[in-house]
Length: 227
Image (cartoon, rainbow, N blue to C red; front, side):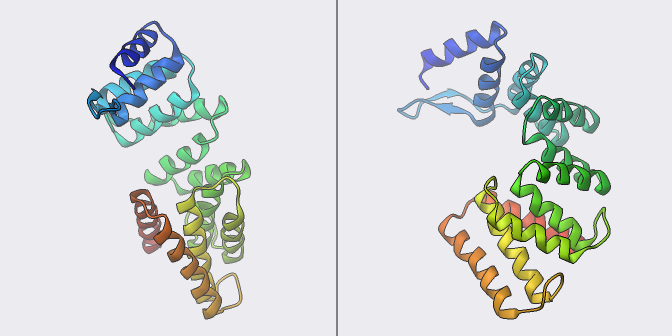
């Protein structure tokens, strides 16, 4: 993005255009440089939150979703879980497919595991493969729902074949399916099958490793250990 393009976008946003407001917020969230590497927009979580709020108030469902996440984490704005959930629900009812899982995560991070399970299921029913993994984890360790290893394995299997799933999410699905085989829970014990599934996860991670992959696995591991 050039400096002139940024000024044009900012002018549209100041004129109340929701899409432009969302784009401005996104630029502040990540920062922006031109082709020569000159900084056009310096990263600012506070300004990002302000513009996401404006876009959200003007009906942008992606902005409502992002604002909910920021409020839930206290990123660039004072943490407010109830307001976060309110914006996330608005995004969900406006058709944002990511909002249901973010609602679930917000509930889980604040200790309401039953509500988290409800929203992970809703997200999974909508075709979200990453939500299937989370639902499987809750089933496997009996968090917020009665422990059901067979249901967990079914979730992990479905996630390995899901269309709408992140690559790191699919890796986690193979990993947890492998754990189930090794422990013989929800499926007949088979160390070879377990090792094969876990190895498939490791192979995929080596070919496509990212900080997001590491963060995802670390979060799941902490939740599992807490069981």
